Length: 408
Ligand SMILES: Cc1ncc(COP(=O)(O)O)c(C=O)c1O
Image (cartoon, rainbow, N blue to C red):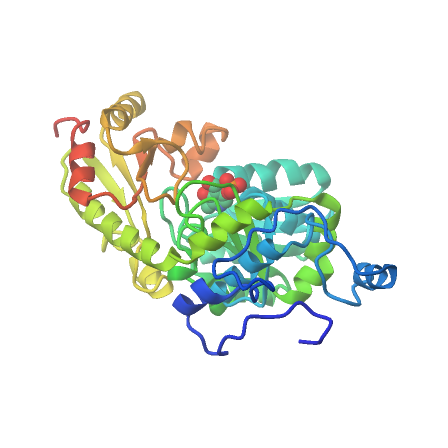
């Protein structure tokens, strides 16, 4: 730290995750506030013209204009970077904004991306559609077949993009193996860590170069704001992402950053408790005759169970998906709709990461913009329901789901 840089909180260098989650950020202002301050200001005042010039020339680190620097946003970025074990973080207006900034900052026309075909539907649309218009090509491969990832790499591959576990089928990819493939090819590995969060999984420690977040989910944790972030090296932010952010302005508002900042304080206990309740429900669903299949990484029946337990601190995560039986696709869909419509506690909403349990039919909501072929390639069938388990009593949730399940 030089005397020209923004000061840091004086924490021990070996402070652990739970401590960082409540303490990392910025030192308090001259008023000594205990809870972090919300700096709702578009710009910052300089003491004189020479200082303004030095700050604009990056000779002095300071807050200038909230499109790219704001103290509340910096607190959130520092806290999330610390939790992910990353050097730095840049916050964005949404999770999709984070992926957009990553591609805008790192790639150019003619570059190639390899991505799992099981990632979030809008990510497929963004990489396979919007960025293809600008000459960035993406090959989609199986989430779990490492050989397919290796075979898809080309001389112009610059980025491997993975999400683990995936939404909604909780498919797990081998982050260490993908990092090796990326690095052998001189490319980078980015991992969307939305479902596990650093409370369960730290992709950078497993070899990933970049972690993507939709802060809208577990980082906020109570369904209040849309937010996103990229965690990576300081050099990547300084040289690639911040220049793109200054021009593009996919900025996180200080208010939303403040909400996420406070959400991070309870992240670990929420995600661990919600995961434990999700596993209880997963076991119960496996025992229901009307349920054909249950997806949760902590179930021994999950195809990547051992990998998931190794990679995710022995915890499956808060999301469970299950398939309701039906004689054909139309009846499976009708049965899935009946389960969803009979609930009185679960919220019928496509968002997840909330302390309130949410229930959705991925085929007609989160993955509704994909073609049927893309959906089937991603395993999204008509009987599939996704449950993002919150903090209600699991017995009440079982009764809520049992109400609409057809007789076996
Ligand atoms: C895994 C994953 N990544 C990214 C996103 C996009 O995040 P946002 O809605 O904050 O843009 C979502 C949203 O549902 C998601 O589930």
